[in-house]
Image (tube, rainbow, N blue to C red; front, side):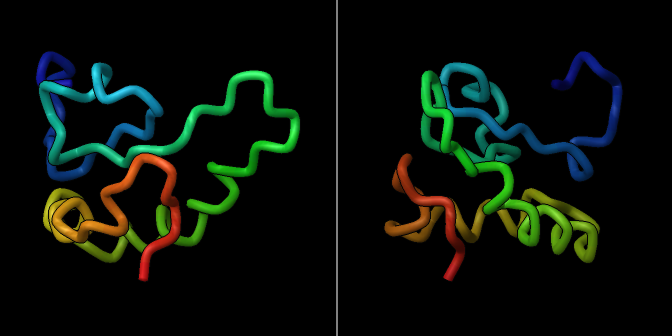
Length: 81
């Protein structure tokens, strides 16, 4: 993501694979895998959270707090308490 030349405070990656965001884990929103799941609603469930990120000047500060929460840091968890 650094090679894009954009401000990392404004960028996040939503992915099911930690390998995809291993270089910038502070910008990551992990989600569970959706392969072959016709009822997958992961992105839909993240909608409000993603909209709320617009209220922060640096997404990493919010994502960092969530990542340190042992419940939210679990791969299968998408809700933020």
